Image (tube, rainbow, N blue to C red):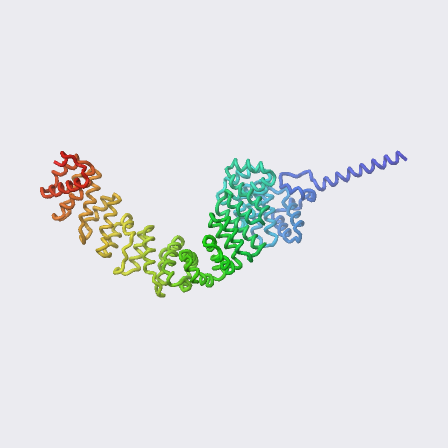
Length: 576
């Protein structure tokens, strides 16, 4: 009996071993090669033989199409890993490229993601390069999958790969890698971030994790963001997220309390406070505006931009009408002007159709400031064309246009003058302040324009004088003789003479008087006397004897003595 039990036990044992070997052979084939290892949870269910290994690339591509047709995600995943098992880097890369040629399938994106992940285990560099070959809209998703997979295997090399990329992908790579590492070890993520000089990125990730615990406590969450050492645009994103959650949970019935909290937290952070106010008011802006008007002026000034912007997005006409109410207009006209300008800047192209929404008494100020704002994003000629369109409707925009052209001319004087000379009648050329700036860029063009301006504005003298004031002696002298003598030019010649004296050209300064009529010679040297005097009498006295006539020498000497009577700086010997 005992012997029979022993034989039976041995038989069962042998059968068990045989079965074990069989299952081992089926699920863990000995020839794994250098192909793609499947995820741990999938290893046990993969077949020992890959049908795709014995087929060509056409069969592999056909199999991929078949996989996309499977209904269940688990089936697709298992079939895909069977397909790519033992495939080389190049083969998987070609399979990804082939997937780009397939018609859109609801499963295609997820299958491509698995392929990118599999390739990242073998060669992340190739996997990243293939990201740029995919549809532009998918870059972020596939890029993240590649770096998540690589980071779970070798975080430091993953960070190194990320550091070789251009922005914004460099930062995205660091963020994904640090997030992956942080989920495993805070200490490792801190050390890794520090070694690559991106502790600020880790700080943002840490902040996001901490916010998850207080997201439903608005004051705490807002204060956490305000105090965080992160870029301002990140703060704006986070406070918007918190505000959305807040409104979704509590609504805006008690808007006054909500705005009061916003003011307390953001009183020194206007931009974020305005954003939060805009989010709160998004669904019921009129109600929120009414609630705001019951609050203090300080609270209104911080929050009205955001609420007004939200209202404009829903009902611009009602929002603008609210601004024109006497009680509010009287309360703070400058604040109202600011809100009108914000709206006009955004609606610039539509202003000819909407100008009546701005009160007539406010139109000039609003258009002037709005024109300056839009100048950075529109061609100046477009801005001026719209102002002309408004002028044809009876809106007085002439001074606004002149002001705008002046500002334009300080940035690009040549283009501004060309526009003026092409679009305006010569009889009404305005005397723009950029005439001098134009002289430094194109003096002939400046003089041409100056020739049409009124004499009493001294345009040509301004052009040449500006050249001299900026040390352009030779250029100024070259055009000085061509300036029409509509006024006394003694000042300009004297300014040139001063530059000559400063550069040690005393003889040239004395000879320059020959360009002037005889009756202006004394005035010329009298002006120069002050410059010589500033250099000391030891230089002036020798020059005095070289002046053209006794009359001039006498007049210059008297001028010097009259100055001394006021200042008393000369000694008795020097006076003698």
